[in-house]
Image (cartoon, rainbow, N blue to C red):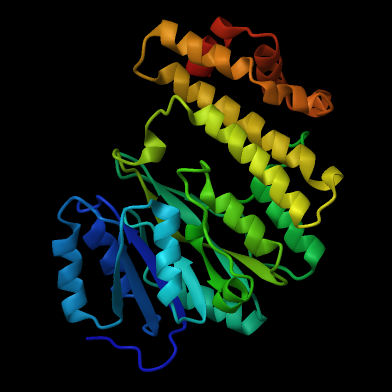
Length: 345
């Protein structure tokens, strides 16, 4: 039985909801970390399955594990509940249908301490439905960003790249492949919003956090395993996905303004973010198991949305050809062509 006798180095927050098929895999990867001095905070978000029976086994044999039980409120608020009791020097957020390499937290923690960093991000692996692993790393070597301009550049490249870039974004915006300074979080009272209000709570968290961070880094090691889960909300088509994206677009513009960024710095990035979400939504729509007439109705709603009027100064001429083509198809309501090229792209 492992125990933490002093302030733990890392508090790992794990929301639990309807993940009985994956929970043991996740918890095994955490209790076997080579960095033993961690606390593992499980947040039961009123999970309706047998997850409780599984995590009770782990609670009984490892006193580094803490439990929070709360009314169902979604992923963001579950993470916040974990933050309220966390005592670690750093915070990590792990999704309970995923798992991590046993060396993840030791490498992230040691890198942070030896370089005086607020945050360290690692690479990640996508595990598809056939259990094939596809590794991704955003850097080739340890890469440190040590000025506010450099950290702000990372934040912007998480939102979206410049209009001319063939990349949609340079850095993944998910919070699960990093550790974060708890002092920075608590001193600025940084918390997650609800994904029921905004379609991506992670990106808003990063605006709040990175706008306050001073030194961050990326390492090339792919330690996180992001796994295909057929029950995940991100794998299903939502008819309101684009409307939710528009709300998020408005919130990102507001947050950057509140944080004191110049509009010339962030506006094109946030607009490209929405353009990318629109393309992604249209691709998902083209393959959704709904009638063609319903697809046309949803797509027409997307193309007619007032948000496109706010992008009249977006430098479309700088966009890569394929992205420019889709943008013009949206602008001129080429519904059938959009559905065709999205399905067979």
